[in-house]
Amino acid sequence: MTREFSNKVALVTGGSRGIGRSISIALGQSDARVAVNYLSDAVAARSTLADIEKKGGTGDIFQADVSNESAVIKMIEEIESSLGPIDILVTNAGIGLLQDHQDITFESYRKIMATNVDGTFLPVMAVKDGMIERGTGNIVCISSVAGLRARSKLISYSISKSAVIGLVRSCAAAFGPAVRVNGIAPGLIQTDMTKASMDLPLQESIKQETFLKTIGVPENISDAVLFLLSSRANFISGQTLIVDGGRVTVP
Image (cartoon, rainbow, N blue to C red):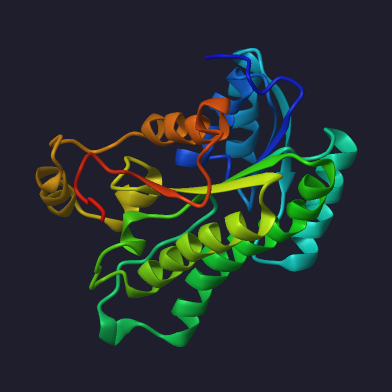
């Protein structure tokens, strides 16, 4: 790992488990001061922070429901008071639910939209003014390949992840040139969420559809995030990078 992010403060929402945990640790290894956001699992958040510190990084944990505006504003104030102004934001908090269309309710739809869309929009809006004022900032939003292709049993989730891709494009145009905004669209990644929502036959079927005949691991995503945040990507903004082993290709 490089030390490219020395003296930078990075907030990772949903940063205590799965992909978020990997991103938090990778940023810590790159010398960022990492704010690990979590909703309810303080044990997982403390474990992630311990791993950051074990690998020579620094940071702290911050509890907030990122779908709640007042909670997000309070969290940003706490982070800036404790660690300093936020230079890097990675919006990773998300939930999914496999459902047949006849089982979707407005309540279940709204729950997914609140976490995945509001939980991206609110942190982005909360940090962007400070970034623009300081003349520098970097945002990466975690979307999904489900936002790019049909998913008959993930209708609500697909809608939410398509919205994240639209947010990335429009915010990149609005916040430039001071702030770069990009997205990552992961394919199937081995996390607790995928284990809980997908049975093994479905996972194997998806694996066989990829060019690389494998399922991803969280480090595949954190590596891509660090690239987009790095100076090597300083001419990239408004893009959503697909990281899925080749299952989805665009255009």
